[in-house]
Amino acid sequence: MQCMMNRKLIFSVFVFLFVATVAHASPAKTLSLPAYQDSLRKVGNKLFSKKQLADKDRAALNRQYADLLEEAMNAPDAYEFNFDSLPFMARLRAEDNRFRIFNWNIVKEDGTYGYFGFIQVKDEKKNTTKIYKLQNKSAEIRGAENAILTPEKWYGALYYKIIETSWKKKKYYTLLGWDGNNNVSWKKIIDVLYFRQDGTPQFGDPIFEKGKRNQHRIIFEYKAEMTMTLRWDTERNMIIYDFLQPEFDGMRNPPPQFLVSSMSYDGYRFRKGKWEYVEDVDARNKRDKKDSRYNRPNG
Image (cartoon, rainbow, N blue to C red):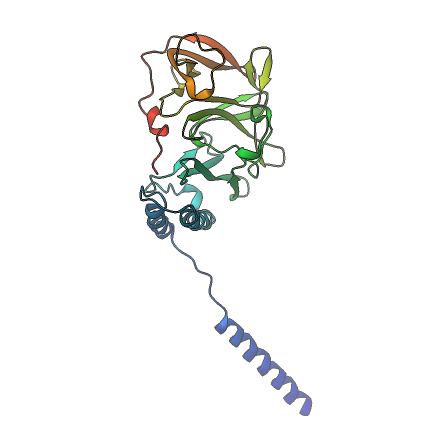
């Protein structure tokens, strides 16, 4: 009899402790995707405002924005949610729907830019997604045109186009991007993203022909405030870009801040796993109307 009473007592204590633990546990905070989007828009309106902010204040807002976006991307069904009421960041989805990129920049007090983003990758078989945070290490990268990079060591840019190609069962996602660099020179970038066998994303591959050697990415640096075309031409199936020349006649090996558009165009065409250089492309009447949008990002 005493044994049964002891068992009842122990069971009662166990139930009490379990109920007390559940009652005092903090419930997980969950928001709907539209609610996340509303919160992101509120933070984004402050973060991307043209109002002068100290770097530390804008950095704090940026951390809040990035954390909120990452939380939203981990929500159920987030992969199909477009976040289309957030005009201050790029939202690019691969044509095959394998991944998408969220990408934005902020302006610092010295006129330079910080670049941020995420790659959200979908696993169709498991119906799950994985998120990779892009960490800009441009200032630390030496020989950037020939470097193999990762999301943790990323050459920061604001992307505006994904071009999908493949060769011998290897798929490439070529990225066109803009980099505000500094007050005297800007950059445009052709990079390439692909996925390793373990599914992790990697940037850079020696598939860009330039002279007698191949490069992992192409970086154009030119005079700030100048509009340089770098776009995908669907009719010609080519990447087309402005050929850069010295701003003044007679200049030899000028620094980037003296390189401007020559109003002539070169390009790259994908063939047998390589982007082959094509000289003197007739594309003068096909300038992309959206191109200048990425030369002067909001901020």
